[in-house]
Image (cartoon, rainbow, N blue to C red; front, top):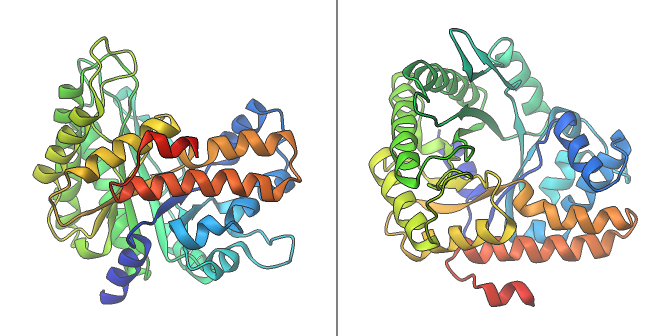
Length: 336
C-alpha cells in the first residue's frame, strides 16, 4: 500500500491539483452545444488533447480524471491519451461509476451504480494506464433529505468501490457531493455534509480500506443557490475547515475539492481562503471540471484550431487554482 500512498501524494503534490475531464458524452455534448460546437468524438478529443498538451499540465496538474471514451482514444500524433498525460508528469485516472439512478423507496434521491463487473473493468483500466479512479455519490438538501437511507446506501457503495480499487492497484477518489441546489443555509450544508462524510468513513473503515491511499473530493460548505442568506469567503472557509476537522480521519493524505457549480473566480477565491487558515496536515487542493475548463472552452469555440490561444487561457486558469491551493491567490492576479 506504500505505492498507493505515493501515487496519492504525487497527485496532491504542492501547487498541483486534479483536472476533472471525465464528463460523460451527454454532459460534454451539452457543454459543446452551449458554445456552438458540434459534439463529435473528434471535437471532444481535440478540446481535451489541447488541454492535456498544455504547459499547465507540467506545472499545475497532478492528475487527470478521464471518461471511458477518452482513455481509449489516441491523440492526433497517435499517442494514447494516458501516455500523453503521463509524459507531462501528471497521473491518468478514470471515472468508474455508471451514474446516479433513482434510489428505490426514496424516489427524490439518487444512488450511484456501477459495482456490477467493476473488478473486471478496473483490470482493463489499469492496463490502459489508469492509476487512480473516481466514484461520485450525490445528495440533496431539503427539509427531509438527505435521508438516512441515501446517506447509508451511497456510503456503502463508495466503500465497496474503494476496496475493489485498492485491490486492483489504484487510488480511489471518494466523492460524496452534497449539491448546492436548494434554499438551505450554510449551517444546514455544514450539518448534512458532516453527517455524509462521517458515514462514508464509517463504511470505508468497515471495508478495511487503507485511508492513507485515498483522496477525498468533497463539496465546500456553501449556502444553497436559492438561499436568501449569503456568506462571505472567510465564513465559507471557516465552516469548510471545521467540517473536515470533525469528519475526516488524520490518515487521509489530502482533500481535492469539487467546484460544484461555483464560478471560476469563486472556486479560486474560496479555495484560497481555506488554505489561508488551513492548520491541518491535509493538503487542500482542487479537482475542478468547469472551474478549470469553462473559459478555455469559450475561447476554443471561436476557433477550434487555435491551440496555442486556448492553451494560454487554460494555463492562466490552472495557475490561478494552483496559487489558491497555496493560499497565494488574489483577485488582482486574475487581471494579469
